[in-house]
Length: 379
Image 1 (cartoon, rainbow, N blue to C red):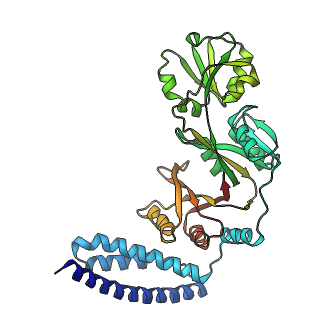
Image 2: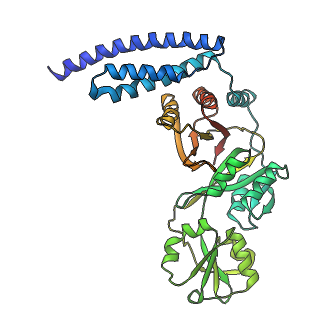
Image 3: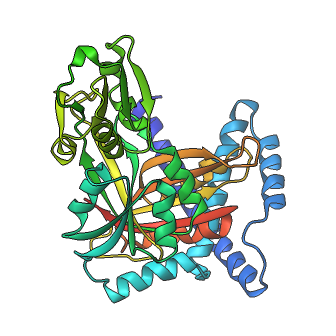
């Protein structure tokens, strides 16, 4: 049989499948309405398990695995259709609908902002890009920033979330799960590191280098080529520069920004020491209340999923079925639970998207833990 003939037969089978699919979705919708009227849960895992067992038993052995995947996806599509047509209540969907309906104002140009570190920190540089100007209050730790926003001391906080070469700032991820807050904007800032020391210091005399762990990782190649030098982590690159200036040591150096040389009276011993010129850090601006501004196109979530096969696949299927683009997925262990994980998602879809609202509404109802972190613009 020719390939054209085979394709014609497949087309005919597809036409039959489409009609059967439409009939099945109509029945699923009727069942969804009945469940809502009777206050019954949408998911009936016992029935789905029995159907999968029966169909896999009937299928040819070499196809049983594909049958399971096919009908598991079909169950997911049916549930999505039921919820989309039945208008189940959803707090996050209402929040997004209100933001679109009221056409939120532009992002504020001035505000009281919490940052970690001291003057010259990269967080301060990100803050200056986001606000013009900002009333900045500095804190010694990232948790201090979260506490300042949580307690109402500052309207916003700016913290680093991830770097293009050294990865995520794990402490910030953990704080994101511990405190209730919302991301209202994010910015990608190019990071250029400089080796600084007190005036009179020579690079051959340096015995110890201070900096934040992220900066140390971002400059790992430069440091590896420098044998015998002690590497000491500290809370912030700008704080390291200030401490170096205060100590007056000529045998110690810091990895920091070039701006800190002028701020704290230091000299540059080596420039552009990061591993790559394409070195960016993503900073997020957080607030205690959800604030969705004009141009919001990115949404962040934290989800805890059931510890069973297919849990993550089912979540990804919701996004795939609606053509929603994920540009980040990262797992973090759940404290106090053995090998249980929560997942951080970044979704690249405008706030006006009905597909986004439907997907979030379903996830809010179905996941063990659903934390909406905000819909915002990234600059």
